Length: 382
Image 1 (cartoon, helix red, strand yellow):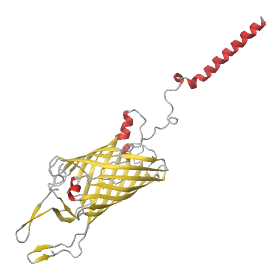
Image 2 (tube, one colour):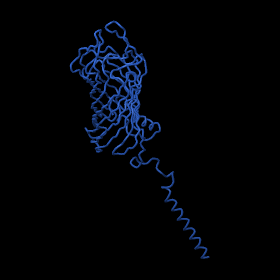
Image 3 (cartoon, helix red, strand yellow):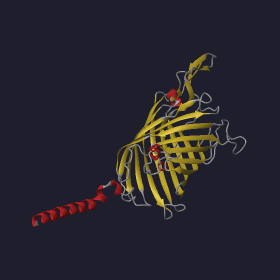
Image 4 (cartoon, helix red, strand yellow):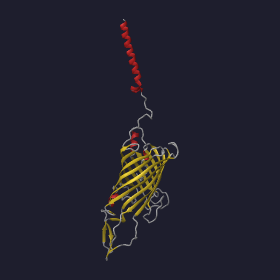
């Protein structure tokens, strides 16, 4: 009897200890007892896509005369264009200190007016496609002092536009340098005028062509010689094609509010054209050289000014409206163009969507950094 009592007591003790161990382990092993969501600081950040900051842009722009702004006569060539732009990016490696990616810029344009940009009204045309590799080095990661160095090399320009591939342009090859520097204006992310981002850029492109002057093998332009005989020619203009192209720009992004920014950009493009061969005009007495300037310039200068307001409606989409003026310093009529205004000045309305961020939103994942930090206005370098 004592032996039976001892055995019963031992079995009871083992059972009680087993239940106690199971109850103590339940909070860690039982899913029903786990919290439905972990705190944000303990939650693992989602892995960034290799295609992040890939953007889609829908842009609408029109010359100021087209929308009735300014003087009665501003341009002999009113213009309204719609453009779809894709800026794909693929990151080969990325860490907090540096990253390396392959990027591109593809634009499809439709002109709704009957200007000189296209040969037909409502025609769809591609702009020249750019493909480049970008190396970004973080020089300073302190909040309010973030600074990044950007190297764009090599940069390849493909003649996918009708103007380029019909005028004898083969391709362009170059490189670019840039700097992104953040300046803290006021404390707090949601503060009014919280920060300013400065983005100076410099790019160089060498254009390879099959002819120093613009030609088109599909066009036989008839000219008359001094004897009145017809001479067919495929030459489009008397000017040479660009050989060296240098772009210099400074863009400033001012955070007015958390989702509202003011962006301005000023820049200049220098083009040095190919040298023309010694001109020769056939006359009855032989070859004669026409009179010309003793030191003709081979440089063209284009100025750029842009200003706009951009509002982020979602973490992946941003709407912008603004004004831009990009024009040759010397117009076709021989008159000087202003930096802030010319007959080519435009107003624009644009929608920018970060495709990777939009995909995250559709999957109800934690949103990544808003896409509008990468690219806003078409034409911005790097």
